[in-house]
Length: 493
Image 1 (tube, rainbow, N blue to C red):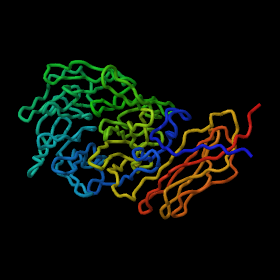
Image 2: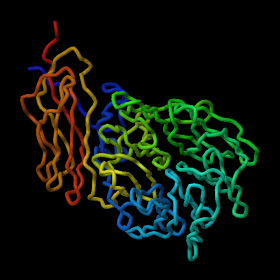
Image 3: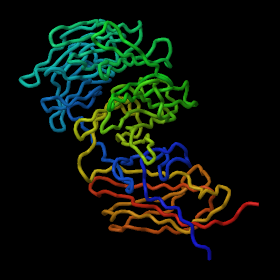
Image 4: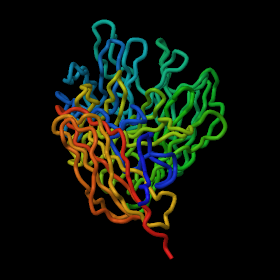
């Protein structure tokens, strides 16, 4: 009797593979989700769940978050987004409860605006051309609604940055500045008329103003300005569509560009860009469907970074409301980087993504769900038993012989000792079937291995799926390996 051949998966390197069959060994298909790619490549497990943190501010529609020097987490948003009182509000988080520390008397905040700390004060747009502030943070802070005004009145994209000990505030195609003594409503930054600054990023001696053109959704540039000069020095074209935003990660500029589509029947792309000198390069492309606009799906405040990783919050498919928090930058063997659906924000259907921000060990997120009225604020849960369910979809396996039929003898799943009530469900697809076929469930408390037998369909190509049912109180499920024993059946005539 011929010895069984073996397809063994015991290294779960993070990130979606470039191709559905090729790419690095044991990467996973882009339909996978909830996987903690930052843990260990030999163990497959879920991320910590997101928990709702909105008591006191259930309709705040948080636009930005900040970890201030007074040790307090603040949120910049609305008094009641979607309601009658859409005024700008600065929120303060105590434990898991938000309270307002300042509310504008009229006017809304700048969508995709920011809150920033500078010299013991928080600064933000309190109206569409009015800068408010809150401080001093070190002693008895108070709220000032109308502190200064900007040259342009804006409805969105109120980017802010600190460069050379000076605070800079974007307003349309202009930049205002405050050095702690003098407010300048219009600096020497002479961006062409009607361009819109999306991001302000310090980089070396420069302040980078990343902006989009009014002429086309496909023209975006980064303008480099030595703020001691009277004009920006040089610019770099950004390829592949409309700029969403940029961040500085270790002096490498990384960002996201959306190439939207005209209707739900066409495919667009979400592109990760990098710049370290020379041309701006597209380093990863992810297909998206039904995105006719950047503003309702991705924005600058839904970008952040931690430990060299770019985090992206957004809606990937407008037709079905699929989205969440994605990552780019986890290295995998061979020096490649990965784009991964990292964290589920807890909404089955998403309509609009506002912001994400790392604050200490918490990742905060703000979004609107499909009800059109539920403005959620969530953060990663810090309890060790609150893990997200995972869905692991393998790449397609053909044993390097796509022409040959093969028959599965059995499939073995290895895990940690399963906690009480835990379940691991195994499914498969052969020859690119349209749906998964259930094989069985591993669910015995304390079990570490299970062999699955059955009348499996013969295959030329095989794909496996594992899902878990981790929930609070049950504990963590870790997948250690999947082994498929099979035989080659025939060679076609």
